[in-house]
Length: 123
Image: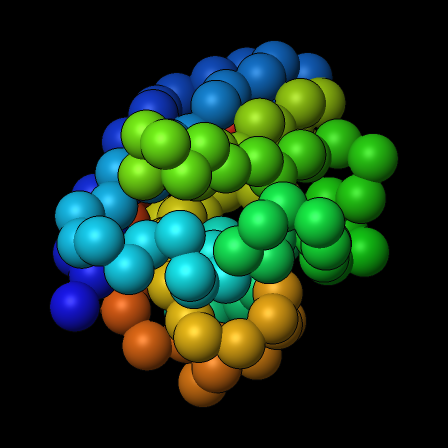
């Protein structure tokens, strides 16, 4: 069992940066791949980024490549999403998720989900 709690969201101007954190409970955290997804109002949940259990592999949506960076600290049971050069279209609720496989972009590959943190980017 893994419980996930996101933090770090907020309101930022276009071009700004935010760092999201996801704190995990559960001893099996370090065996899970971790992903970040987002959902904007009226839109489906979409993949943002993912990282393998040992940080060897990462995966990014084309829309965030070169702007976002995912990382994890297994000693702290945490995963992070550094978001730079933010755009209004990045506005969404951001969710972290844990899954037993690799750094998948498919939401159904993830077993555990957090409650989400709101990111709003003003133009």
